[in-house]
Image (tube, rainbow, N blue to C red; front, side):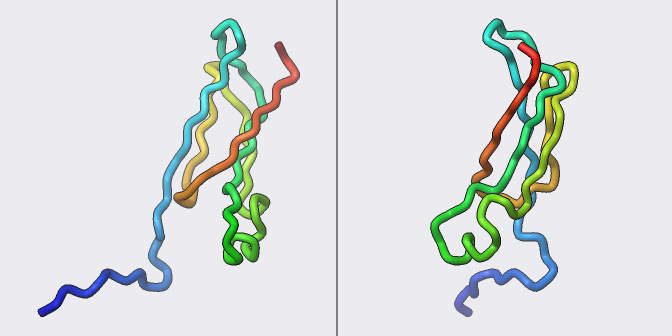
Length: 88
């Protein structure tokens, strides 16, 4: 028999992941309380544009005392990150 390609059934996850970010200042110290925004990086395909581009699935977190923020349960693929801090 010829092997058939695997198919994804409706309701099955297509791949999820996590992304951990650590923010440091110019002197190498962690930046606590910074806002980190993560959003799926829009592609150039019509499907990506119809899904809402980089606004669909966007999330915002704050860094902890170690300068860490961890995004969980993300769709696989490229992500755009932006960080902003009022300190330093």
